[in-house]
Length: 306
Image 1 (cartoon, rainbow, N blue to C red):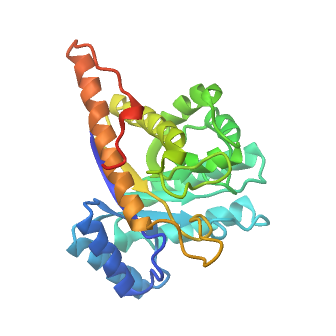
Image 2 (cartoon, rainbow, N blue to C red):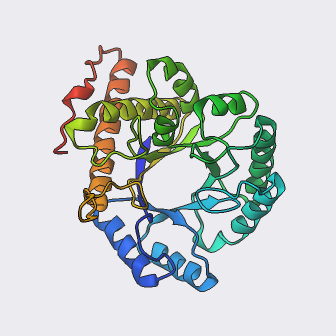
């Protein structure tokens, strides 16, 4: 199985501006990303220009769709309105030929029955459009909590974009008591958002810091469970988007407002670290297949200098 990493458009000032998109594509190429993940540009012209940029640079695309609002939904919107919004955005996506749609969908105020109905119909819409789709474990949405997600997954086989950083802050920490649940969630994972959350927030200031070593180790363990499940399922590739971003997520100096850390550098480091961990995990699995005794995997030996 191949690990494909994607550069997020989150943090680029204007995705309607072709120059901004050119900059993003250039950074993706320079840093060894397989593609770009981000929203669909609003205009038809910008969408066509973006499609040409992706093709020119041989970059794949993961499209991001939010239903009934932005990252936080309109909580008065009905299930039907969410579905109509999804259908409209799927119809606009064809020029970009995405390998996957990451849907930030549903609403946290819905009942489990409403959420299950939404996901059932959303899967039908994506299937009709001939587009692969997965649904993100995002705050404010139907999959905002691991325990709600557990109830939904018991009723529907749902492909997931796993962003465990959201659950870290929603639950004020995820401990070993949730390991069985997270292993079950891993079986449904189609895509990973690689941001490190902690007990009091969805994004640490810098995952390379010793202050967040335990949080980094937890996320690496959870991601390894996903990769192992995907290998057993016979997947050809796994997709991973390092997603440290601005917009209230990035910590700032309270005196001058300067951002703490460089997001491009952090996301690039996260991608390289995960390639390293993925390769090491595959080697351990191969040793087991060959009848060799695998060496212990020690997360404490990960070097921030990677």
